[in-house]
Each structure stands twice: as structure tokens, then as C-alpha cells.
Image 1 (cartoon, rainbow, N blue to C red):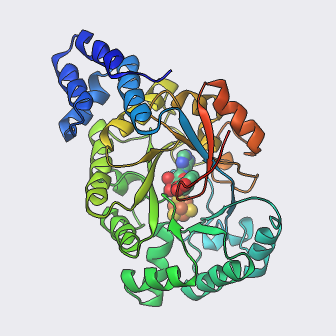
Image 2 (image 1 turned 60 degrees about the vertical axis):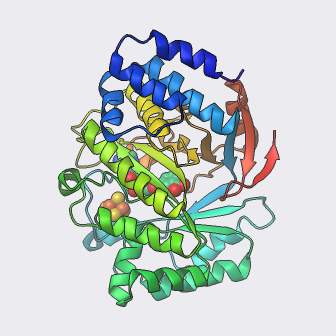
Length: 377
Ligand code: V47
Ligand code: SF4
């Protein structure tokens, strides 16, 4: 049953804290909440209050619909010139024999292994290999499109693109035009981490900064492409850093409208240089999803990435603002299993995903990358 304005109004009226009540009334009146409101929600909001507000917004936007898509991943390499402290997945070029690097033919073979299967999207993301350049990736994009033109290619983070464009000595605008023309349809949300320089300096000092990340997404949006945005949370960041991150995204979205989905990514602590930091609790996870739904009023969708969060928590997020749980991924991504996710072998077929969504009384909807509905279950 959909939460009504009256149900939520009763919850807002009964909350004792005056600041929380004011914020609740803004949400009910469809008013944008401020930076300080966002921080207050993290500081003072109870799980049940945040959940009620976020669920109200989620159901106003999407009712019970919960989206997923049929996709697969290609990770061209885990060799990387950068050394982000939270990364369990990459290997430095000096130790490249410990990692993998796929040729265009090997990646095309992965695409071909899905021939005849009803996948709509390939998600391409990996490390930043010093020898895989713009020309290599343009050839890859063209080869995939020549083989299966209707397959949507969502690929490359601004970390990879910034490196490719700088090495090829092309501007961001030119680089985006070239990759788009070669077949790149949209950008995934990775590489954003936490935008604020105080945190970036500590966890991923040497890769593209906030301005560079946002510039590349803006250039993509200006070409009519869509993109996602992530936030890696639950390590050294403060509540204000989280809101600053979302605020920068909300501002760009006001300008371009090109973002589809926001994806909070829970920091996992296995096998990396931040293993001494404890992982966030499930309660904190749900609060992050809820505040994201409330703060990012101009983002159509909030996604929980189940291979990282685990299936049970992903189900729970559907009551905390989330309306998308990504795709039916085969065991083709190693980013999370190597960082200690509960999902060591992330595979779920459509039937399992549909059951997962139905168990929490939501309506499963298969979508394509751009949220065109393919099948309502
Ligand atoms: O940017 C790396 C994250 C991201 C860890 O757009 C970690 O649809 C947690 O962005 N603990 C890449 N997270 C993955 C990504 C993504 C995933 C699914 C869907 C989409 C989409 C995008 O993975 C990186 C980084 O933030 N990451 N290491 C870790 N230890
Ligand atoms: Fe490289 Fe990405 Fe890992 Fe950073 S998170 S070290 S950029 S693969």
C-alpha cells in the first residue's frame, strides 16, 4: 500500500525535534531542503523518520515500481596507474603479471557469449592501464557496435576518460565527442568517491578531482548522453562531506538534467589500505539511502547495487528511498568480491531478482539503461 500524504503528515507532526519537523514539512510541501537540512537529517534523524520521508518521496515518484535491467560487465584490466587506498582490485603496472589485461578480441568474445540472450546493456569499467589508450577504446567501442548495434554501451569513469584524453592530447569535449561517435552511449557513476578535497587527498589523491569528474559528465550531458553518479561512503568522510558531494551533483543536475541515477556505494574493507576502518552498520547504510532520496530531489532514481550491499540489505533499501536494484549480473565483476562483499559470486537471474523484489511487496519492472520499461512483472 502506498504511503499517503496524511500518513507522512502524521509522522512529521508527531516528531519532537523542531528542526526535523521543519525539514519534514519542506518535503511534504515539495520544497528543496538546504545543505544544513541535509546535515541535520544525518545528525538527528531517526531511522524510522528518515525512512518514512524517503519512502514518501520514492512512492510519490515511482509508486511500488522497482527497476532492474539485464546487463553484463566487461573489466578490460585491473592494472592501474593510480593507487586509491580503498581499492582492493587494482594492481600497479610494475606488478602487472598479478593482474589481467584483455585484448579487443577477448572482450568481443565476452560480448559474443551473450549472443541470443536478452541483455540490453554492457557496463565497461576497469583500471587505468598506461598502454590502453583512446585509440584502443575507440576500436573496442566500434567493434562492439559492429557486432551488436542495439546493445547499450555504458562505459568508463571520468578517471579512465580523463587519463585517455590527456594522453591523447584532446580536450574533454573533443574526447567525449570521439568516444560517443564510436559507440559510447552513457557513462556509469564510478570514480566520484567523495568529492571534497579534504577526503580526496586522503583516499585517492592522484586521480581526477571533483571539478574534472563533473566537467566530463557535463560534456557527456551536453552531447545528449545520460550518466549516473556514485558516492563511496562509510570511511573517513563526515556528514558535511556527504552533503557537499550530493550538493555538487544536485547543482550540475539543475544545469543539465543528464543524470539518471544516484548510487551510494558502501565502503568494503577487505584487502585494501583502509582495512583498519570498520564498515558502516546497516542502520547507517539505510540512512544514507534515505538522505540521498531526500536531498537529490532532481535525480529521478536512487539505486542500490546489490552485488556490493548483499541481497538482504538491497531488499531493505526499497523502503528507504531506493527504486532500482541494478541488473542480473553474471559473475563478471570482481570489484566487490575482492573488497569483501557478501556476494562472492554475484549472479542473479531474472526470476531470482523478480522474487527478491516481490518478497518486499514491490512491483518488479525490467528496464533498459534509459529507464524505458521492457516488462512489468
Ligand atoms: O568508483 C572501489 C567503488 C566504483 C571499493 O553507474 C568500492 O550503474 C566499496 O561505479 N568498497 C566503481 N566500493 C563501480 C561503480 C558502479 C557500480 C555499479 C553500477 C554503476 C552504474 C557504477 O567502485 C569505484 C569505487 O567507488 N569501489 N573499491 C571498496 N573497497
Ligand atoms: Fe585504479 Fe579505480 Fe582502483 Fe582507483 S579505484 S586504484 S582508479 S582501479
